[in-house]
Length: 229
Image (tube, rainbow, N blue to C red; front, side, top):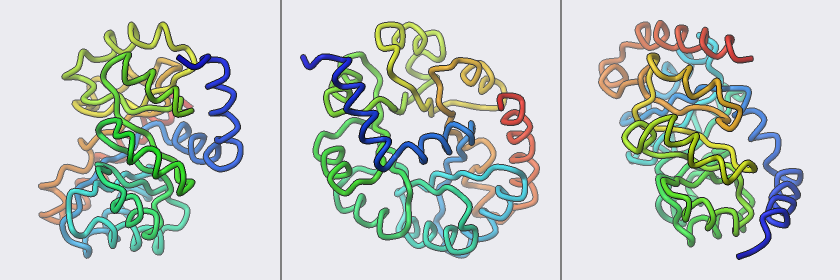
C-alpha cells in the first residue's frame, strides 16, 4: 500500500490547485441540504427558501431528470450558493453535473471509474464509504474527504469515531439518517467536515410547494450551523 504521508501530501497538492476553496466552503456550511427536485420550477423557490434562511449550500441529487437543469437555475439565481450534485453513479452524470455548474460531486459509493474520471475532469468528488477498506482505496487515489453513508444505519457517530481513529488525515461528510436530533453529535467532532441531510427539504414538501415550511426548517438548521462556527 502507498505511504499515507505521501498520499496526504498528494491530496493537499490537488486541493491547493482546485478543491481547497470548495472544501473550505463545505466546512463553513456545516449542514448541506440534500434535495430531490422533480420539477425544474421548484429549483428557484427552494434555493430562495434555503438561502434566505442562512443555508448557502445545497446538494441536488441526480435521481431525477430535472437535476441538471435545477442546478443551472440555482446557480443562475443564487450565484453565491455552493451547489453540488449527489447520487453520482456514472461518468455521464459527472459531465452533466459539471456542465450544469455543479461545484462538487457526491456519490453513494466508491466507484473507481467515476472517481478517476472526476479527477481527470478536475471537479471535486466526495465518494461514499462504509468500511476501512473503502477508506484506504480512496486514500490511494489521493482523496481525504469522504462521505460516510448511510451514517445512522451503519452505526452512527460511535462507529464513525472508531473508524476514523486509524485515519486521522480523513474528514467525513456523514449522510443518511441525519436529523435535527442528532446532527450536533456529528458536528462537534473535528473529523466531520459537514453533515448532509434532507430533513429541512423533504421531497413531499418540495412537491407540495411548501417553501415557507422549508424556510422555517432551514432556519432551525441554520441556528445549529451558527453554534459550530
